[in-house]
Image (cartoon, rainbow, N blue to C red; front, side, top):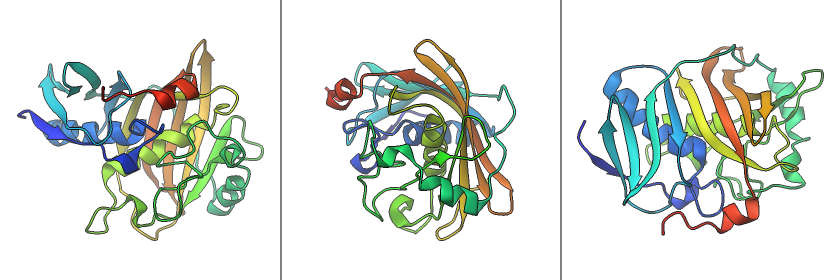
Amino acid sequence: MKRSSTTIAHRFRGPSRSGNGGYTSGVLADALLSLTGDGVATVTLRIPPPLDTALETVPFNGGIQLWHRAKLVADAVPGSFTGPVADPVPFDVASEAAARYPGLVAHPFPSCFVCGPARPDGDGLRLFPGPVPRRDRTVAASWIPTRAGADQSGTLSRAVAWAALDCPGGWSLDLVGRPMVLGRITAQVDAVPRLGGRYVVVGHARDLQGRKAFTDSALYSTDGTLMARAEATWIAVDPEAFNEAQPSS
């Protein structure tokens, strides 16, 4: 693989001035997996991904790095999972859980491409993961993909599937009382959702250690078929400072 350039468009933001972690990770992972043919990749985010800025992908030691000028933004390597996948949740239960989504009341990053309630219909994924009854530390969101996540051909990308696995894992934690951002994610996408289909994304909190938290998430079709899964590490941050950050400088 030769060096190449990519750009994270402003519409794929997480915090107001940087790329959504799951989407950015998916873009880099897709480049890696197309090179290696593997199914699982681990992406580590090093700095907030700049928006609307040319970024360089560079092969390195069997993986791929993403650079902005002299700053390492992220790196991707072949990955593996460490624990079981989150169990499925019925579509109607996930729809009811979405009404209890804490981000509707308070949200550290309300314009997030994936879970931001400030994004209007047709502009973001609007995945609203709420607590699932009788499932400890588990949230779920129903999802009927719209053109908000599609390319010009009307197809959802694998990077959007990675993005959909990102935020539901985070919302299995207390993101309102203890805001966090994605630090590392390992994911595998076996099937990409289609526009107008009915899906469920599940997030589950595994552990909390100091400033770090560990989650897993999964994307299911309504018949319970596993389409994609992820494990993630989250880092506690000050959302005000993070929203004011200028990663492209």
